[in-house]
Length: 347
Image 1 (cartoon, rainbow, N blue to C red):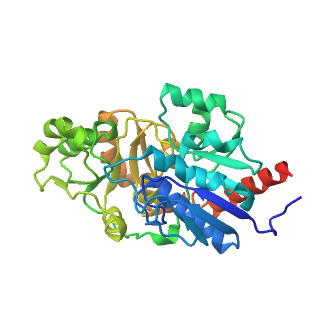
Image 2 (image 1 turned 180 degrees about the vertical axis):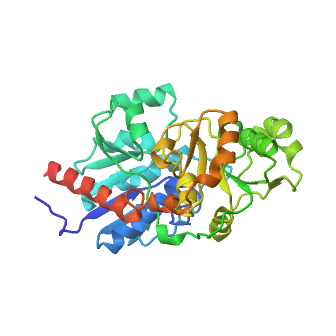
Image 3 (image 1 turned 120 degrees about the vertical axis):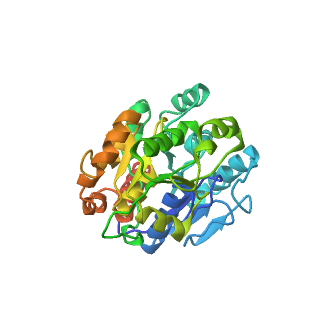
């Protein structure tokens, strides 16, 4: 029986859509980056399969491309990245894949136990069929909501995203602007955030990527309202600039209409003592304590009313609410428990 005093050899396969780093722009990239660094700090031997521009403390990194996808896509690279880990299976005690359903093809081809992270809530029918065909593999997810959405999988646990809570800026007084921090698309509700700002006459700062596929929507619902007075667009904001922008906000608006697995944007805002108003989608109600660290709403009218009540929130409660569930230490503890359990079952 392997116990936690025994250090293990871990392969971690990460997505190619973003660089893997504690400071990554992507939710998976940052969560896996933090996990890798903490596992190494605990003495484990970690090999990371990710883009070459990833920055972690992994003792070894194997890459199939220099940087993450930026307007391009290669299915060949996706599967080559996964295959690189499994063809070296004998070198590892466990293989942890954070690439959604893509890794399941490889799971039963090797003796080394594998763990497959499901961190996204929207799947096509053929992807759901694939997951059902491989339901007996070992799965982990980052929210209770996603576990409930896919009850047929062989779940080994729920591990919420973790943050380094000491890495965020917190201000004593509330800022004076609403903040929208996401892609500018109809699914993400940017048009609703704009309407909420207009109705409450409160300044809105928008920060996020723009996609050419949303051009018609943006021309009708977004661009006409950007005046750099009431509605201001700052483009995509990253790193320290992003943290400063969050810390200076009055509250974060998160009117996403699609299923949320575990939003790092919400967690980063709460870690900065910024309350969040979010639609009741997926795991949002797991992250936000309604009327304590923000508000869970169902429509534009409720979002507007919640903006008017946000001053009642004790801002210090926002970051305190994360300490027992969403820290990097708790996230790593949980993954370690699953790793050891699967390794021991496999002996």
